[in-house]
Amino acid sequence: MTSWPGPRIFDGHNDTLLRILRGQITPEDVAQGLPDGHIDLPRARAGGFGGGFFAIFVPSPADKAVRYEVMEHPPYDLPLPDPIPQPEAWDFVMRGFEALTGLEQAGAITLCRTAGEIEEALKGDTMAAVAHIEGAEAVSESCVELEELHAMGLRSLGPVWSRPTVFGEGVPFRYPSTGDIGGGLTEAGKRLVAECNRLKIMLDLSHLNEQGVDDIAALSDAPLVATHSNAHAVTPHSRNLTERQLEQIAESGGMVGINYASAFLRPDGKMLAEFSLDLMMRHLDHLIKFLGEDGVGFGSDFDGALVPEEIKDCAGLVNLRAALRKHGVDDALMNKLAHGNWLRVLRATWGK
Image (cartoon, rainbow, N blue to C red; front, side, top):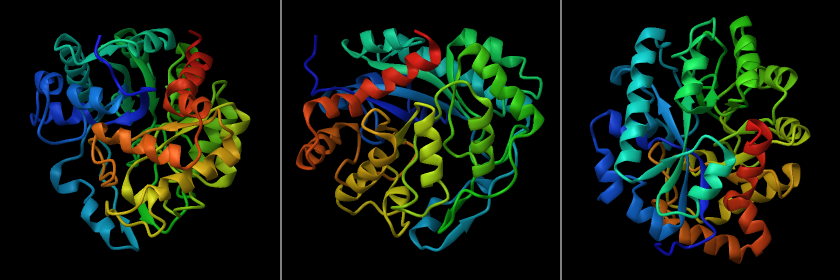
């Protein structure tokens, strides 16, 4: 058994699978170690990164993709890419599940379907992984595909990744802005909520617009969860959550995973990595104020965003723990933030 710094951090969101699907890295690379990117097993062991939600995200064509360098110069309002056709998205998602299987076969992850399995995996020598789909383009309006996806291991789903789907509308990458942009869930979107509740698939509010969040809050019988979002009161970005939304999440017994993306942490909205982790502590304090100590965790967006230079990659989580200690976080709260709150919410959502 390898000694990992602890408590291990279970994380709400990463995009490592997209690097595999683009042919940039292989599952074996993740298991053995990489010279770049944010996640591999050796660095996870060094930093105490216990794993998390591994997102399957269908990218837009390169000429339609969001250009994050524009976010270095606020104000900005990036146009959203076009919707992705369902058959095309389905094929890509199937490749995503193949990549997850490849990571497990390479010895990098343990694929988990229950909170108990996550808890056991966090004691082992691999990263715990939960299958998440970011943007439900692979699901048709009938939602019939959810049964098969659940059987394959899907346990978390975001109805949108910012660009519109047949289920609802997301928020653009806009600063300064709220998420009060566009309409609520479509009839298909309401059906998606009901089917996810029936199958006990967690619904992710991150990227969804304000009306869509309101609709899920009204319809869902599960805790409300935003896997990788921050506090709008600290950073007035469209991707961040208002105090009213935080109250909705708190009332449901849900939680928020703090996103490490620089533009969502910095009050100036700039996607630049040079800043103190004191800014993350400001988001932490605000989220705890509304959600309590049981309602906050982490959702790094590793391999999908520019993270603070003080963290840099998953090995840098030792620096995050040091910043939390300096901020006055004791052992009990550290355990909750690291993985205890995720396990609580997932048990309440999945039933086991």
